[in-house]
Length: 561
Image 1 (tube, helix red, strand yellow):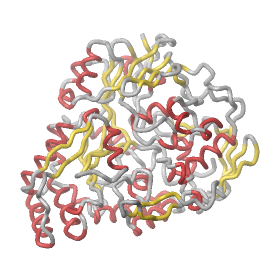
Image 2 (tube, one colour):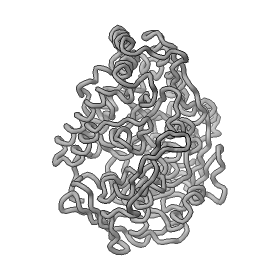
Image 3 (cartoon, helix red, strand yellow):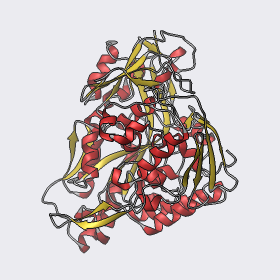
């Protein structure tokens, strides 16, 4: 690759963030720094929960499905532990101008069904993902490719209930800027120069697919065939609402070779029992801790714990269809809510200092992070100001207090305590009723968000797909983007994002993304809460546990004793 621009590998900013959150890991080889060989054939067990959707890369954009997909597939690139992209199936990625790219695909690799992985495996998978009739969640990741607008087009129609909704209406089936030159060559033309576009190619949306996937996507997603370090253990390896079992792919020769015999993800709806199972050596590793264990996990597991900052954040999201938060009154209420939340106290008392109060919409470990974006004062706790803003909103349009303000959260993520604390902040400061709305599975909340039927607000979090400021802004808040479930739309914000992607220097790009965040601080479509750190504990049965730049445990590196 000849160009590198907007998003670079994690550097000194990451180190500063680690220091701020007192991050570290347990001693000995348990923190990934050692070289214990372990048993390369033994299967490890790990915490997880039911994926939201069938396991198609372009339709998987949540953590529990994502951790499985990333182990089943290999893309053109991968990311090392520090977020640096390294070529996997890409022989080379070159461009003379940042707009026209020639990608050479390595030959001689196969999917686990024996089909060869070729350039066509990528081209067909990308066109499938982008085509609006296929309804793939990650389709918007191909928005930079020329011709994407034609294949992703939708139109607005009235349904039987009289409600308007968008329905697929593509005018082409393939992107004009995506051309298959030969079995090992892909030609890509972007709609504008974006010299850091290759950085995204390690994300799962860009993985290749075997031909059978496009013939019957639903069936394939239930029993996927990949080309990564693992494969499904056997037919029926995915027992819904119980577990998913993977075994080592002996034919894999990429940069993420498995050091164990497989990974069985056991599904829990509460991190408490999983923590107990780790203590009893009945589960090998968990990356979700019950809130009450944040004070004790370092002493409970003195040699077997991890605490490490990563590219992730937590937010409280506000649907645009909630009438209490629409118009000028709604804008004032969003500001009031944000200033009613005591982030400092919650991160200190509830999270025992393992989170850092947010100062923007991204994360400190990403290059270009700026904690002084105009409007960030709305993230500071100020009870008097919050009450004043709420009163101004009431003078414009009274708040509908006929039912409590519900804050949706998933119990499988250890969220109850902080949700309760936020609800108390809102009640005590603004004088309205607020309460948590629990769901056993994260997928349940995602389905409500996707169908735009949330009764109130919802907790949300973002684990970066690739190391970029844009990745915290575009996929979440750009009009029509894959994870913009709450329906925010701002032409000014969208324009600044596009200008940032097309900027000629890192500094210019970061300035545009900062301006885009200024728009977000004016609108507050979601409320940034805090930056994340990955806590994990593991049993006496395993070693070499560590997480990567995005907080995902490197399951392939874990060794069994």
